[in-house]
Structures are given as C-alpha cells and as structure tokens.
Length: 113
Length: 113
Image (cartoon, rainbow over all chains, first blue to last red; front, side, top):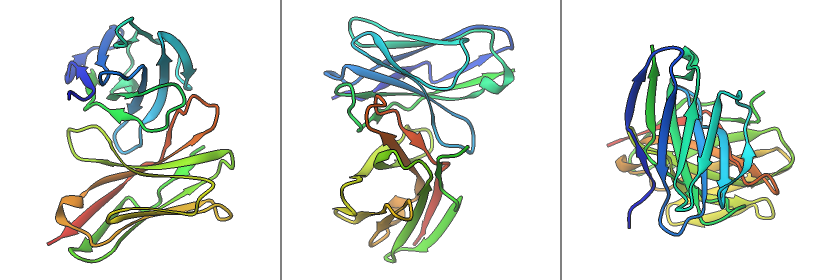
C-alpha cells in the first residue's frame, strides 16, 4: 500500500513568491495535517483538515492557508514567502479526527532565497 | 515557550547496550505521548505511544515510561542495534485538540557497532 505522498520533494523560491505544496494521504485516511520543520527543531503544527473542513490551526500567519479536496488530498499554500519560511514541510494522515497516530510523508524541502 | 523538551541533542551507545532517551513536558493537559523515529530524507515514523492513564508501555525492544508527577517520559531501547541510529522525537497531544502534536527538538541516537 502506498504511504503518504508529497510533491514536489524539493523547491526553490525567492522572497515574495507564492508556493503550493501537495499531499495525498494513505488510502482510507480522511484526516490530513501539515507540519513545518525548521532545521534543528521538531515539527511544528500548521493545520489539520478532516472531511474537507479545517479542524485545527497552529500559530502561523494568514500567509499560510490550506484546503482538502473530496478525495482527501490536500494542498498547503504559502503567500509572500519570507526567508524564514525555508523549512521541511511535512504532511501526515490519520484515519479520522482525533486519531493520535499520524503517518508522515517524506516532506517537501522549501528553500527561500 | 517549549512545552516539550528533549535536552540531549545527541546520544551514542554501543551495540547491544541499552539506549535511554529522555523527554520533559510542561503542559499538564497533555494526555497522550508518542515517540517518532526519523531517518534522513524520510518523514517521521511512529514508534510507540502511551496514554496518561498508564506508566509503561512495551513493544518488542522498545519501552516507554511515563512519570506524570515529574512530567517526564523516557524511551528505552534494549538491545540497541546499528539500525536504530536515527533522530528520535518525543511528541504530546491534548484531548479535544484535534490531536495536533507538539514535538520536542529531537535526539540524534548513534549506535556504534
């Protein structure tokens, strides 16, 4: 069975640009979460979506947005990129809302120059 | 304010010996704790978890201990194997929070042959 897949694996952008990251959850999983991992730190929660609705939001500015599609895949959008947005962006899926066990993808490494 | 802390950035042990990774937390609302393992260029992989109603959980070579009064948990790996070399993250969540995870900064475990 395929795990959580994310695309692209690497991305280079310049300050002020916009970026869209994509995630496909494990088949049968209805919840998708996004995390940001800055070098040397643990992943930090950005969003959780369940059944196409936002169910949780971390302490991130409004430049960050996301959505979940009817097939449960998800996109994370970041506008007006800053140098500090350079990080590994991880997508995780779980069976349902409130399920603690998350399955992570390999992430998208975003570099902002 | 780091609510989950892993104070040891790195740990080296000999193959066959016990590895003990430690984690402290400050939020008394946390009721579920997890350990994830991360290899380079891969996403975190779930290892073992424990609910706050327990003080110990075992799974093969891995055992997690929870001391609620001290707000401390630890992961024991016995015996340690070279393939265990990875970054280990401690994570915690609060009931009713959509189960968003709060991660520590990780401990790099190196098992020497």
